[in-house]
Image (tube, rainbow, N blue to C red; front, side, top):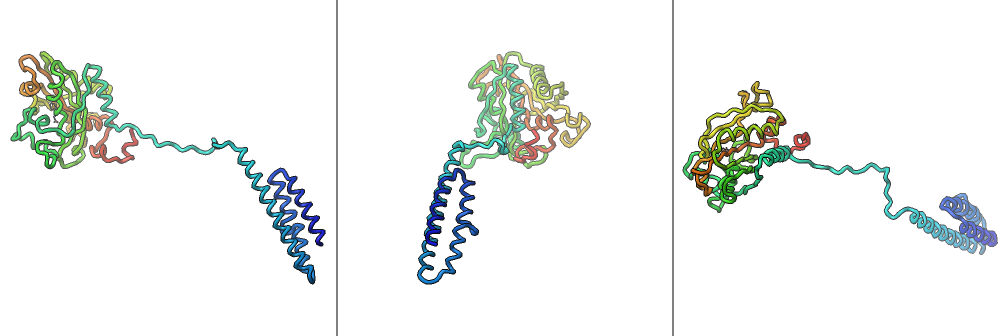
Length: 340
Ligand code: PHE
């Protein structure tokens, strides 16, 4: 029996070493070491032995089993290594479904603001942005709105704690005198930007919104220049002629002053929630620059004149896309934003 065992061992070793693939090795392992394998068959006979032979043969059989198991493990390791080597180091399975990167896009306010800028740049206007944290001087006083003026109540805003005289700008008109001081006359510029008001919110009012201000200073500027610029602007956005209506309006920094209404494109002038059932949407404040403002900007009102307008960009975007609640813009609601 001892001889049988040794023969088995030599034969198994030789065959194991000849194996070339993992599959060969698996087969041989079952043949020699499996439950119904040759070694198990011998081990089963050990229990029928008697006397000294039993532990001796038992020990030998176990030792041979261990040796064979060891060589199988070694070979398996080697084959595994070769298989790994056959794969390229950066193995890329191009049949796997890809990961779609989540791409964002521009906010509707930004989309329209850029279109507005394009329209005005073609008419020779500079695009300037101003500070959102502003002094009372540029936001109010330089615009002919002294501290005691009731117009300050309509434009109540957020004042900066411990910094008297500083506030969040209520209007892009804060750029008027700043720009006259910096560039002098003649001058054509638009000022798109964010403005703030301490306001109870509803479908038409927000504490934070966007305006586009336009300012043109030159000699002999009239209301005709103003109306033309506004019509070109609206046509640039709506791609068709849009009806406008001028009503007298009071703004301390223009004289004369107007409220410019645009025919409601949401209901085609029929009357809806956005236009308060009037068929018109109040969207633009405008007028000819007040002599006191020209003076504050260092310009002589006897030589220079100009027009200014301020438009609510949110309202324009609402008309353009048929949006019925201004609060959606700042909501961050993807169901809203993904529609653009
Ligand atoms: N700044 C004014 C507002 O916010 C609009 C305006 C701008 C009016 C320029 C006249 C001229 O209501």
